[in-house]
Length: 123
Image (cartoon, rainbow, N blue to C red; front, side, top):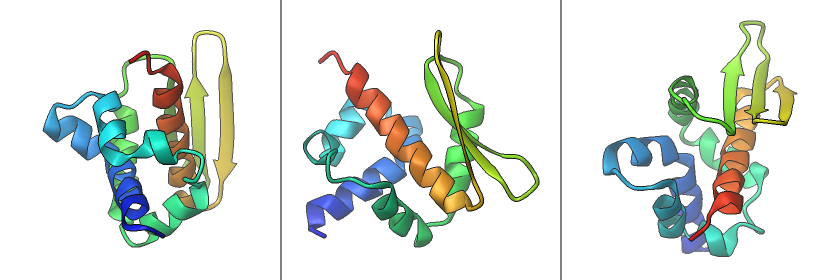
């Protein structure tokens, strides 16, 4: 793993905190992370490995999801039965993935959120 790849994982994993504190647009955060150049290489498994060392980020993403007030959007939620759901709510489309592991669920949420931002980038 290169240093730039590790930095990308760090930034996209901490996206909610950066977005809240730095007053940067989602597009600017992705540009800063290098994700636009690395997106084909960034895997949910690598994100999960990063999250394993930073497990508090799962809670950060749960709080971020609770505050989303727009569609389309990806979200993550625990159902209280040791199951985690990553979901997409859009105007015409909905998807849902269920996981037994919160780290794997959060990695899915992060990857799909970054892809949604990248695909909708008009800049």
